[in-house]
Length: 247
Image (cartoon, rainbow, N blue to C red):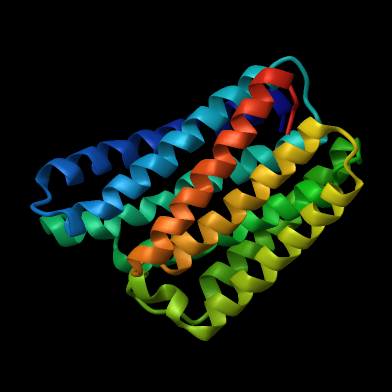
């Protein structure tokens, strides 16, 4: 597929997902009767807003050229947004309206999380590889593998309890660990200060996303995760805007 078309389609899909998430979050905050009930919507609003700002800064600095690393970062931002669609389960519990069947929501959550960490691992592995064909093949085969895992792995029908099962959590930990290790390797070899700050921000976002998603039922872990995601996202956004660094 033409790189510009792929970029446009990915961006449009991400914007659509973000718009859906923000609309549901605003509705949930307004309708909720107490802070405990509204917290998931508030936390999701913060994460989605940060992701939107990162997306704007990213595309602002990468509209003129297509770098092989862009493919993985575009995918990472897209699936980071799709991950937030788990707010639909809270929306169903609040209103009784079911937008997605529980089975679909769970599998979508699994796929988005697997793809998020796979994309970040791919970004790190192909950090200095300028071959568009090799990165495209790697991404294509990886996407098929992550989709297969997300569909076939044993799981619950309750999105809140999906990471309580050993199989999904084990796969997620393995993929997330690979992503973290590969990014850490790049970090130790990075020479520029802007690059170091960007990579540290990326690591904080990975850790924050993991805590907020896996321990979503824990107010403390979810809050810490959202805070780490916010700090990491802010670092990435500032470095990208001020230094025109393409992720």
